[in-house]
Length: 397
Image (cartoon, rainbow, N blue to C red; front, side, top):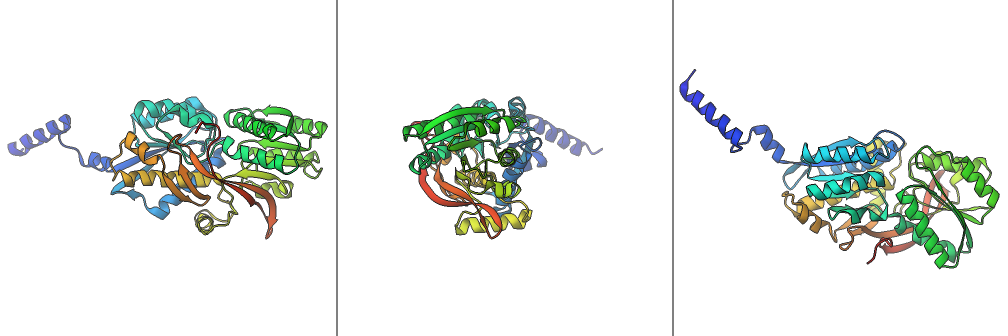
């Protein structure tokens, strides 16, 4: 062996050991911005994960997978459902082993709350694409949300109902953070406007059998019912139960958050959903040029059998926020600087213009009042009223 080459090899090996020279693979790794996407890819909320991930992939297809000269890599992790311990472990691995620059996703509140401490300790920006309990952004200075909160979309509906002849309401919500938020926000706003809450029930978030709960509504015969269950399989099951017990055509007024009339689930609900009044921040039928282009691109990417819903838009806008941060920082990710960029950020979204509140790091957006109608043979959420620039009422401003 040539002694000069041997000595040169030893010198390079020593430099590598000391970190003075990076191997080519490591150099490429440094050029990559890693994004940890934590979703419930399997289990009862898998459809929600698919919608968010579709939004993520669509944004990247349209805007490329490099920003500010740096390649983006998505590291997908599956929590399997409501599993805060799993979410925390996955986030810890993403931060310590994979060295991610961002954490994002989060279909469910318990999972998002479990990861908040890790975002704080590791100083990794965390962008919430769906989880909607008000308190989430208060749990870490490194959390921002682009989706919505339950109080944000619920309070306007309660006020609308009270103004439009609804005097009595029975409240049915899922027994976890978002459900509690929805119940409390509706109760507070509705009673403040002169309405009466005649009863409440909290239903299990895992594997609920809705029959007994809907029977209670049938027995009480309230003027109206307010509903919240998480988007996914449950809204269809709930509305099927209402229809089986004859309540969808009984004159009972049904009010709900948009989770219940999820755009992607509406075709399965069919005519049983007609007439339901909901409040939410996005509808597949939203009448804007940007949304029409979004729906067209989504259907081209994933086929006409799956409609884009509010979760897909959460994924899409979450990526828009991350891209804007990377561009503003010229590819040099610093957590505190990233959060400074997120505060006050404005995004043109398929739902309409949104802004991240610089005080709370929560989203400011228009909330729409919608009615489920059949248009051109399709059951859709038609917006007929709106409240612009709504902040999360669950936080002081």
